[in-house]
Image 1: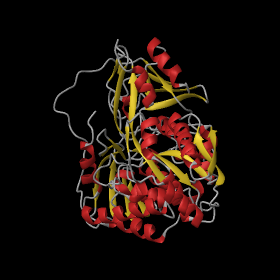
Image 2: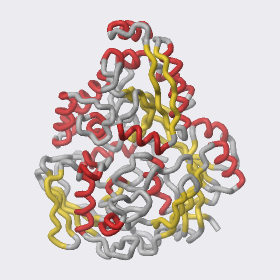
Image 3: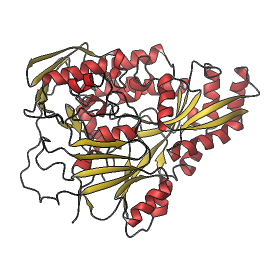
Image 4: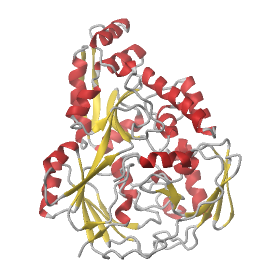
Length: 516
């Protein structure tokens, strides 16, 4: 897998001043056809809390509905926007008008043709506050959507917004069929209303999810597989054993699992940098975390190197709000004073905050993700050194996401996908109106920077603002950014054509085949 050359290519797309037209690349040679058909069985470490593309932030959900829905654009494995439903697009010179021309003849899974009205309905659903969409802040800049004909969609923005194009590739922007949404009273968590490469055949929560090939998919010959079955297997040891015996073909590993499979002559493991990071979040509306000095004390007590060495077995890097893998936009935190573990400084700040003897608190973590539970355990031990007694609360994915949504945590260990652009890493998570700002965090200066930076056509000028925003987020400490880990995918011989994605989706399962 290429390491980080894709980062520079992403930047060129994000901050263009004018894009006249983009079309799908044309092939000059007919590739050899892969073996067609078969069922790929995937060992999945956690269950999706729901399948509505607008509402579910969990990676376990995204990896499923990413295959069920098409969107205007789609990211390739170098994280560049490519045509999906839109054959081509044009951006006006002032950066405020985006025109997309749709493919003709694309069908929803219910057999109806997808049109510009479906795109309009989807985006209006996303930005409607009543929907509760996780992607609402991605598209809050939309002022109006016009559909002059069946295959043309025009977005008129309130202001120039450089990340708009790449945001149309988000899995949360999957285009939905209005009638299916209405038949299910606005809830797509248990059904699918998409036009993607696979159709939902069965979802048996906590057991298995079965997707079957969409025979009407617009790309000839894709998907190659007849069926993809996801089996819930929470224990990594069970998934590794199932890989070895052939019960499953494919799974995600932790760093510990990678060590277990070292030297295997049967199982292939691929790894690469991701756009994700682990974090420790604090609810700034709840005592004592409403005090800056307490949050900073926690920051000085946490030793990130110990977390990287023990939890990630060294397969991770220290990171700030923008994942370190996104090198063009990530700031260098190596000399940042808040990244220096200093127990004496932490105790001093606790005393100044009026809690010299510490306090009791809780740390929520997703029980099905070992890195979260292990990170919480390391942090629990580190916080004891400054008098903080933290009880770890391992939660099932649905309960965890519900607490996240309701802002019901005191402290929470989690993982974020920082995305392919700094706007997502800064505004989405930390601006006052950010859809994923669940920390009750609000800072006027960060709001100003988050609003101004994406309107700039100069990458240099935008970077200055994003750099300032990152440093300020670190100083104000609503989150501690722990590590930017590598991703590990393991699969058996005979699995052909799979490519890992830096955003950790399973998009390339639509090109994957099984040797016969």
